[in-house]
Amino acid sequence: MRRKPVRSSAVAAVGYDPGTNELDIEYRSGDVYRYSMVPPSVYRDLLAAPSIGAYVNRSVKPHYPGREIFDT
Image (cartoon, rainbow, N blue to C red; front, side):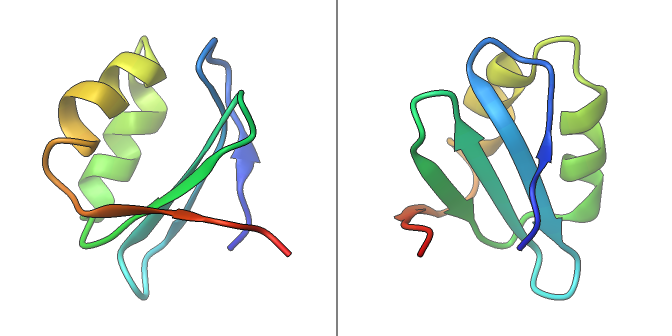
């Protein structure tokens, strides 16, 4: 899935697939996590959040299953 760069001290880029409701978060460390069952409204709110890192910690990680993925 394509990810687009964001302005955040913790997150480098995010991507979303509305067909599968999967959200990719690429952290500044280089780690990439894919979160499942994320509604489109959460992705929109993430992009509009004043702090993307804080939004991820508050509204994504505790509520949606995530797993680390490795780009090839």
